Image 1 (cartoon, rainbow, N blue to C red):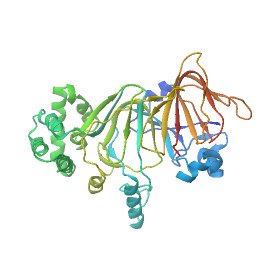
Image 2: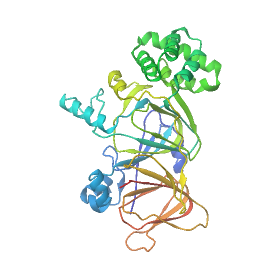
Image 3: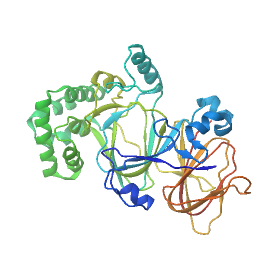
Image 4: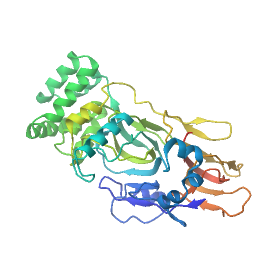
Amino acid sequence: MDRLDNTVRPYAWGSTTAIPRLLGTQPTGEPQAEMWMGAHPGAPSRTPRGPLTEVIDAAPERELGTEAVARFGPRLPFLLKILAAGAPLSLQVHPDLAQAKEGYADEERRGVPIDAPHRNYKDANHKPELICALTEFDGLCGFRAPLEAAELLSALDVDSLKPYVDLLHARPEDSALREVLTAVLTADPELMATTVTEAAAACARLGGAHTPYAGIAHHYPGDPGVVAAMLLNHVRLQPGEALFLGAGVPHAYLNGLGVEIMANSDNVLRCGLTPKHVDVPELLRIVRFEAGDPGVLRPEASPDGEEVYETPIDEFRLSRYVLPEGGPAHDLTCRTPQILLCTAGSVRTGDPEPTTSPASTLAPGGSVFVPAGEKVEVSGSGTVFRATVVV
């Protein structure tokens, strides 16, 4: 079992205070957006044995287990993060596995440099993800019903939005959402900037359900993604609640602190709220134009105290234990690799019969990597998240 030393990524949208508050450190004044736990080559966790990427590469079956290697290859298939949004992230969507393989192969064939700003596919993997709120957490997830979106837009009383309202009323769901999103993203930039300015002022004036979009426009003035965002469900998670984001579902995180887990991929197609490249034709190929409830997840408790966030994905499995003062220890030994992350209190992790693995006491933000099959139990008083895979 290895205690992890993790990199914090300073993306511009990150909160300046949320991660320092969790870790009990002083803010630097700079944004601290994501703390990565895992073996992603962009920022692998560091262990006493070296970077986790090198530890796994040296003995993948010992670290990951034979079943995980057979299923996912000699790599840790998930990336665990603490995410702290102080401003909205880009409005985005992820491909499914077949689309990712096809898109990656196409860009490789065409010789698009892997670091080119207009490159869509950095790898051949899909990127399903789950976000679990540690604080109240705001996000956008999936399309509203067209008539609900029409009502939201109509209330703004902005003339240039009326054609979109008409389309949302007149077309079947799939074509209505597709046509409006296409029109928004391909509109004349100057005219759309004016529309966004007028819409933002109306959102601020109306308040209520329009309030989130005034905030988005404050961070991204004139961005067509502000109007695109109004087509999506606004969700406010309470601590312990989660959202699962599958392939083709447009989404954005707006504000709050959470634990995020995802398949180990960098494939993102952006719809707006970003200065980065937006490939509209490829985006429209990937997006699922289906309205529906965003599906807030609450953990399913098992008799042994594990609370599981159920998803249809095998590359990751996220659960948590809320440990009461003086409660029993929980045996977490399993045949798959694990990362254990403390988010509250003080949690002790270690071998129930110590031999070569010393116990480690984790404060909030502390984490350990547990190789497949290694004996481990948790005890103490606090909350610990458990990330592993399904084989």
